[in-house]
Image (cartoon, rainbow, N blue to C red; front, side):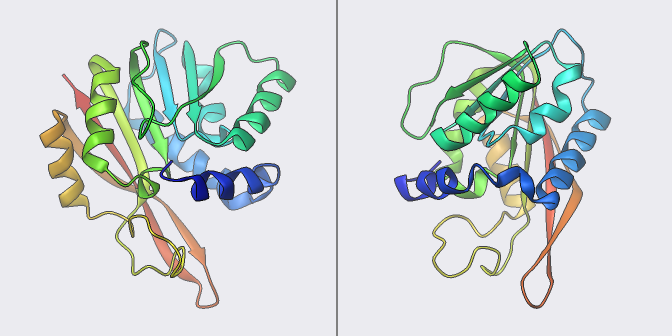
Length: 208
């Protein structure tokens, strides 16, 4: 969501994205965390920002009225469109959107969620303000991403955020207008020769 390089990276990996069982397990763990802490109803409209192939939204879809799935990668969205059509799902819509460059859409949502997208976004303060504007009140924002790490998760070429300090992110959320900010650890990614463990948090905040 931050550059042409990032979009190209995800375009190239879109077709095989769902083949990784870790990604499926991670999405399900985040979905379980959202379901246990947000009172989902079939009257809720939702936005998944940085949706990729929609793994998280497919896990939440039966409990929501409608989901708009937004991403900047046309490759990811093509795979997503095929999955929506193949499953005959009528309450999910894919759209190309990059809030770092595009204007805010007109639609508003009761629930917005994002999985492993924020560490690719340069201006966290702006994206939080934008997502706050896209929520109705009362509404919920759910962010799942990496805790602070030493740069080994992506490697030396990566130019995004090296995870997030929870206290610092909470301050940014509060400054953007969110309340009732709460963090839990919902998943752990293990990767690399040293089998390094990278915790994934789920943050849930409210627009009141």
